[in-house]
Length: 319
Image 1: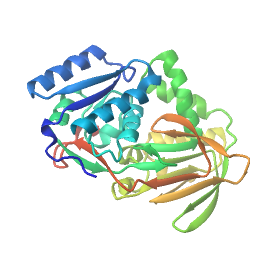
Image 2: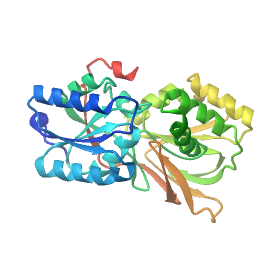
Image 3: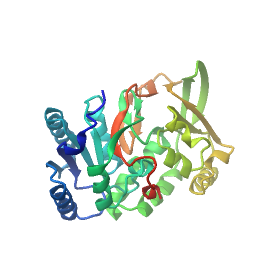
Image 4: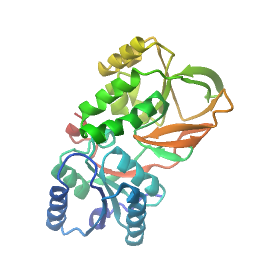
């Protein structure tokens, strides 16, 4: 179901996670009010001051948007955008984004500016375009999903951020510290394209974001723009070799490393060799939750309708 194409007058229902990013919450409120007043655009703000209330506020916004043929806007980081997309997929409403996170991979890959004023200009003037959604056990991911070491890195990152603040340097330092610890790894049966592979790996990463894949140097990052997802698994290795892999990623050369396996697919099933491992911690767009095994990764059968710049416009937001 596609949203109404004449959405330019549709009211905005904005889910604002005040905990995302480092900017002033009041500055964002003022910018939204000024931009919408200038365009005579109606809006409602659903502020999230307590994270446990995020799902409730999202449901309220989506219900209101469906009743009034409106647009649901996620003001926050990739985790907030993911939560809104989970509730929005299949609703018939379009998604708008005001990036407020640390990395903002989803908004940057779709050329949505990180500057609030420019992002509001896109939100109020651009049209909805279908974009690909990934699913793992029916849980949405727009950027990536993972289990093993990468999920642990994301889990530990939140602890470091709570202590030292939300910045890219804190996130990167916490990743190094976590990666240098001992990790038992996973023995997995992985099935895709009619074949089954036995893979031992400390982490399995599935990407749905061309910008992130390009930045770490994976071949064919455009596969996710051609209807596929990309799986990356690291072969078992020592701590120094793992650190070398991290350097390859930082230098955009991860695809050249000998200890990296990768493949593109539309659907993939992952189950543990050890039957006692019935559940796993899985991270989707930075948020970690426990999921039952096996894990089923696939491209969602329907797209998310995202308000984003036309392809011919300059994509400075990717930089």
